[in-house]
Image 1 (cartoon, rainbow, N blue to C red):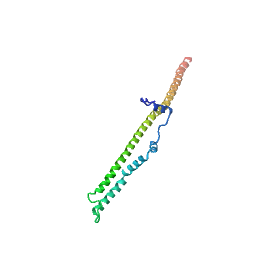
Image 2: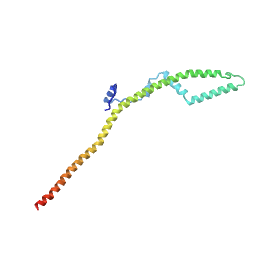
Image 3: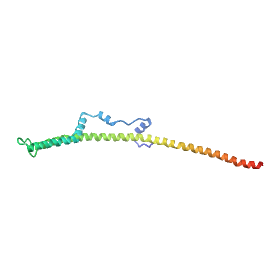
Image 4: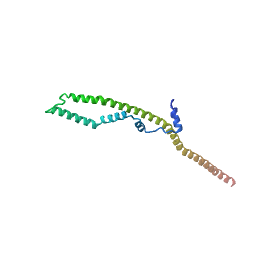
Length: 174
């Protein structure tokens, strides 16, 4: 069995008791999400998509075109201060929400990495045991063949020894 590092006593107990440590962390993590976490993930998913970027670009183009080409009323004349204010407010709110989602995702990734490490550490001794068993299975036929070969050699020696002595005995009696 693999030599475990200090502090892996808990892991060693799991290995000896054959406790399964693998689980679906995504499902476990999703159960613990608060409403704020779900909203942050949804906002980050929406704002960070091509669909949102294209829609926002089209909306900005329409805003600028209507204000630049409007013959009657310019509600936001050039340099588009109202548009700039709206985009600043959007950025002021979306950036922290996206960062909250990224922070939570990073924590989820760290948890997944720790879990993967624990699963790998649990699997390593099992894999070593399997390697030992396979090696033993591969050696067994060779040991049997060696034993059979030894028996054949003994039989051949007995047979050849008798034949060598038989002609000598036959010559002596003649």
